[in-house]
Image 1: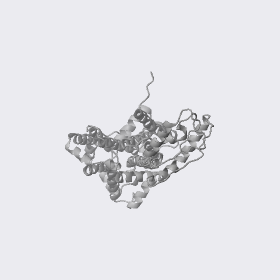
Image 2 (image 1 turned 90 degrees about the vertical axis):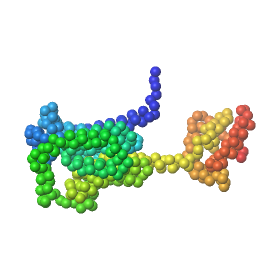
Image 3 (image 1 turned 60 degrees about the horizontal axis):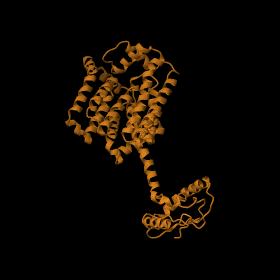
Image 4 (image 1 turned 135 degrees about the horizontal axis):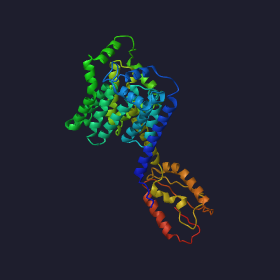
Amino acid sequence: MYTEMPAASRKYFTESALIAFFSAVALLVHLLTNGRYGYFRDELYYIACARHLDFGYVDQPPLSILLLRLSEILLGDSLFAIRLLPALAGAATVALTGAIARELGGRAWAIALACAASFCALFNLAVGNFFSMNAFEPLLWMGCVYLYVRIINGGSPTLWLWLGALVGLSLENKHSTAFFAVGIFVALLLTPERRHFAQKWIWLGGIIALAIAFPNIFWQAQHHWPTYELLSNIGHSNKNVALSPAQFIGEQVVFMNPGTLPLWIAGLLWLFGSRDGRRYWALGIIYLITLAEFIVLHGKSYYLAPAYPMLFAAGGVAAERIFVARNRHARRHHIPRHCRRFSPTSLAGNKWLARLRTFIITCGPRMRNALPYSVKTMARLERSIFLAQSLGCHRRYPGTRIIFSGDRAIGPVKLFWCSTQTTRTSASNSPRSKI
C-alpha cells in the first residue's frame, strides 16, 4: 500500500538532492578539466616528498604527502590518479557548504545559492584541479564549522571530540589552521558557547587535536623548528609582497569570484545584524579574527580562502529570508482566506458566474485595508472568470454585485451574505446580492 511521504521528509529529501547535485557537478567539472595540462611544479615536489615519508617537512606537515603516497600505491602516478583526491575534496567542500546552510536554517533556495557560490569560487575551482595541501584545507575547515554549528543548535557535546579530531588533522595538513583555531577559541570566549568550557568534552576534543598534531610538533622540535625559520627568512626577504588591509581584502574579492561578493557580504551582515543570524555570530567572529591575523602578520592573500564557504552558507540563508519576507509582506494585502467565498467561482446558484459585470469597492472609515485588497484581487477575479468559462458556464448575471472590504468590515459583510444566501431559493435563476 502506498504511503505518502511526510512534508518534512520531502523537504529534507529535496535539500539533500540539491546538495548531491551541486557536489556531483563540481566533481564532474574537476574530472573533465584537471587533465588538460601537465604536472604543476609543486606536484613534482609533493611526489618527491611522498617517496620520503616522514612526520614533517621544512615547509609543510605530513598529511597531504601521506595521502599522495596512498594514492600512488592504489591508483598510480598518472595525472588523473594524483588529482582525483583534490577533485573529491572540492566536491565534498561544496556539499559541506550546503549542509552548513541547512544547519543555519536555510531551505532549498539558501542551499542552492550557497552550493553554487562555493562551486563558482575561483580559489575552489583552482585548488580542486591539482594536488596540493590547499585542496584539503577548505574541506577540513568547513568540517569544523559544520560541527560547531551543530553544537550551537543543541547537538551532542560529544561532537567536540570529532571537532578536535578535525582540527588535529587540519593542523597535520597545513600549519595555517592554527590561526583558524585561534578564531574558534576567541569565538567561544565571546559567545554563549563558552559554557562548554565547564564540561569535559571540549577539553577532551582539545587533547585529541593535540595528540593528532603531536608527531609533527615533535618533528619540528627535533629539527629546531625549520618551518618557523623558513617563514621568518621569507618575512625578512622580498619574496612576498606585504599587502595593505585594503589590498588584502581586494584580493579576497578576486579569489572568491567578484560575482559572489554580494552573497558573502550579505552573509557577514546577516550573522551580525539579524535576529536569527546573531545566534551564529560566532562564525562571523571566526572570519574576522582570522582575517585580522593574516593582515597583521602579512600572510598570503589566499590563506583566508578556506573560510569563505561558511559565509556563502550564511549569505544563502540571508537572501532566502529577504525574499520570504518580501513575499510575506505582499501577501498581507491579499483578500483573507475567509473572504474568498465572495469570488465568482464559489457563488451559490444553478451555475457559476461566467462574467463579472460590476465590481464595487466600498470604502469607509472602518475599512482601511479595502484599497490594497482591491488592487491585489483583480488578477484573482480574472482567473476566476476564466475558470468559470472553461467549465462551460455561460449564463450572465449582470445584476450581481460583490463587495470586498477591509478587516473591520469583514464580519458584518460576511453575516449579511450568509443571511442573503439562506433566503435565496434553490430554484432561483438570477442570484443577486443587493447591498
